[in-house]
Image (cartoon, rainbow, N blue to C red; front, side, top):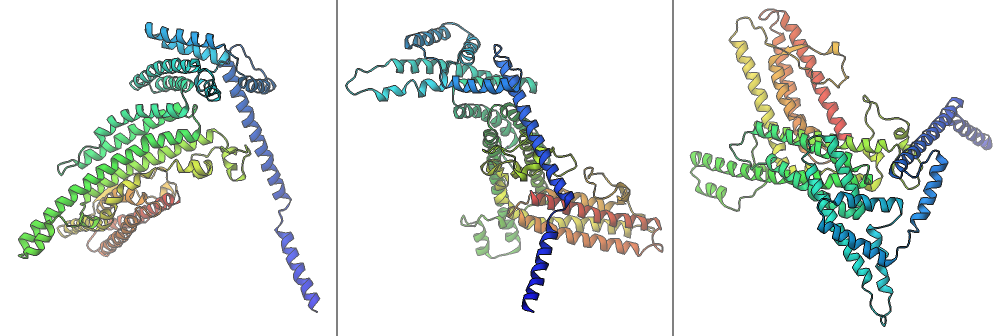
Amino acid sequence: MDWVDEYSHNSFDLQCLLNSFPGDLEFKQIFSDIDEQIEQNATSIESCIKEIQSEVNKQCPDVQLQTSTDCFEWLTSYHHNTSKSPSIPHGDLIKFLKTLQDFLKNEQNQEEMILDLLWDLSCRSSVSFPSSLSETCFHLLSRTSLNSVEDHSSVDVKSVWDDIRLHLRRFLVSRLQSHNEINNSQQKMILKNQRIQQLLFLYPESEVIVKYQNIQNKLLAKLLQNCFPSYSRDSNLDVMAHGFQNTMFTLYSMIKEDFDTLYEILAPSSTVKFIKETYLDTVTEEMTKFLENFCELQFKENTVRVVKTSKSSSKHRGAVHALVTPECPRTGRNIFLSFDELRFLSQVIKSFLKLENDVQELFEEMFLLLKMPRNTSGIVEKSNKEIVIEKPKAHKTSIPLEQLLPGKEVTLLDFGWRNAFKEVSLPMAHCITTAVENFSTKILQQEQNEKSSAVSYDMNLVTVQQIWQDSHMFPEEEQPKKIAKFCSDIMEKLDTMLPLALACRDDSFQEIRANLVEACCKVATAVLARLQERGKDVPSKAPLKNLHILLSTAVYIFQHFTHCNNLMKETTKK
């Protein structure tokens, strides 16, 4: 019997295994997906070949590639020819370079012509000027015998070439700086693209990036100088918040221009690194300095406020002395933030969130344009199938950037602006609960006073603003059109605090989000209790129409908090 039981058990396992295999329809779908993927790869390769043909035909008029075979043959021969650049007699080379050197010194505004000449010699005659002279022509010095006569000719060539490059570099840098004054964005990008390519012809990529980075840093410094003024107690927070918003918009325009200028020239990882180091890191550093000054001033004002209060309410000199001693700890718990100050910080964070989202979409667009991830094997991985098959639709969740960038490149996208808020995050977490409770209690008290002063209480109504145009969570016919004004006032103030919760990633802003959610729960409970209380007045003390208003308001509260909850879930996944 044992073997029978064992056989039955094994048969059952085998049957389960067979049942787990895909059926005919599943196999057809799998093969169909594979065929579609192969077709997409073929289309991508064909598109790349056409781009190569177009670029070669444009750059080299004497070469006309008509077919894919012509393209492959030209690439093979080009690689062979470039590895064997023509041998130029040293005398001719030094004579040519010195002629160029003298021409640049004695003639004005001839840099464009010299650049075109060097470019044509490099493209059409395969003459290598830039790095080859410093790497191949001068390594012979190290091979000479100690007993041989020194030959300084190669050093002369390098010296002359470096002088020519320096002259042309100054010209190109000057042009790049002047191009920043052009208002037409498209024209500006085209001209800057051309200048950077000319610099890359003369110097290694790393040196060109550093030089262009210095140019853009000066331009960015002027922008941020007006954006981050010294904070004082007399500063208009609304005006400052509006200034931050405009600055972030301008900053993104600069990022977009440089992105469009560089991504066709540099490798994707180099483009990402340039944007991060030039713009994102700089604005984070400036924000850190601003918030340090902000916290310092808040700490001093709070200390003075506490000292004055202590002097008027207490005679304990020791306590007062302890408050004003230099040893008083400067911790986040010593800073009190009002609702207006919390709203200001929330608006600043909202601007950073928008910039972060826009930059991320920009990089996702770049890698989607490449059609496939940048990997050494050139094979499209299964996990990135969606990238190759179709671009994401507007109503679908965008593909996470981690799927588009291989390991090392993902780290380059880190935008560490949240680190700037470390010092002020603890005061925000501690003060947000009090601020929310204070303004909600005040609004509820105002509503109570209006009700007490009226014989027959008609609730004040407001039309609900459509702030969720992109949200299809609730059908439009199910969304309330008019609600009680006191509820709208509370929700409007709560919405100004929402960016503080949406900024939460991992451990950052975690306590702020938790405290805000807790405060929202208390507010929702208080508002619903008020609605129930007003419902009891119908119809004896209030008109019947109030009942419809109360129901609409309750539905609005539910939909509003549901929408906020979903927004927080989405940001947590990013």
